[in-house]
Image 1: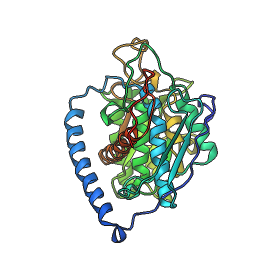
Image 2: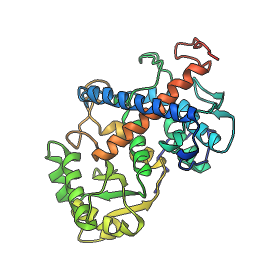
Image 3: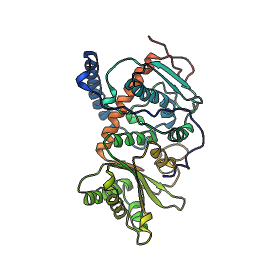
Image 4: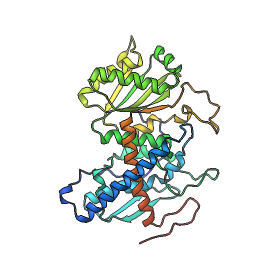
Amino acid sequence: MNYSSLATACHSDEWTGNTGDANFDNLSDHDLEALEVLELELAAGLEKQARVDNKVKPTHVKSAYRDALFRPLFQAVAISEGVRANGGTSVTSVAPSHPLYPVIRYEVHPSYPLAAFYKPEGLTHAEEIRHARFWRSYEHILPRLRQHTRPADWRDLSDPGRLEWFHHAVRHSGSNHAFSVNLSAHVEAQAKTQGSTAGWLSKRIARRLKAALGREVDCWFVLEVSQHHRLHLHGELQIAGHEAEGARKALRLAAGEWKKARQHQAHTQDQPSVVWTNYSCKEWAFIRRFKTGRFVGISRPINGEWYSATKPIRRLASELYFIQHLEVMKLMTTLSLPSPGGRNKRRSA
């Protein structure tokens, strides 16, 4: 994978810990009670979320600036899981150039074992820097935009933010591979005439993968236009290492297998990090559809959405995000944090 197209900047956030499954046999009464409360909150929240999501128009563009502003809070919550698993009691998360949360410090209190649901992703130092570079371009408070005081609900996540949670859903489900595949001229021409380019391609890919691997394969992917104005895909597949070769063949067939240099048409890589989603959506503003703003008049090479994800991936992604969003909201009530308007929020014990 080549991440060199990401924006240039630097970020000092770093945490590479990981957590194992919680041991429910050893949970205290307090932990069990808290876990039961979480399950009730999760069920109620997801039910409400599903009702609202059905009414949201996909052409309504969500703010990546909003997601970037609250990103350090999600990082701090993820760090707390590693700290708690290792017996620590305090968390410090640093993002020196962030306009709202350059430093977050707080005490980790015993609570229900979130590690049983959401497992933080351990990134290398280089991956942390690349991940931060992508979001750095959105870490600004723009006067002309609405000033939000809380992170977005699932339905209001920006496209780059949503793709990251597709990735988390895939990695929580088992072995996974990143993939890139180029379309043949014939399939590309067909795809452009469809009412939903991504939807049409997703069906072709699903059919070929099932035929090759003997089962349905969960995945997500995005469409991108190369410098030579050709459509290609980036995404992730829920496959094991021994299935990679068969998956590449299936991707080539779905994309219209090249007669020459077919070994360069489809590529896979084992266990990608979240940085892969940043690379995959580096040109998202030039291919997604807009109803207003400066990109509204741009001619699009596709119809419909610019990304696709199977239903299990979408469902798990929303569940994982809801869990972390709930923790972030709790964190915001225990810290003295600045608001976009400049005033500090009230501090509680």
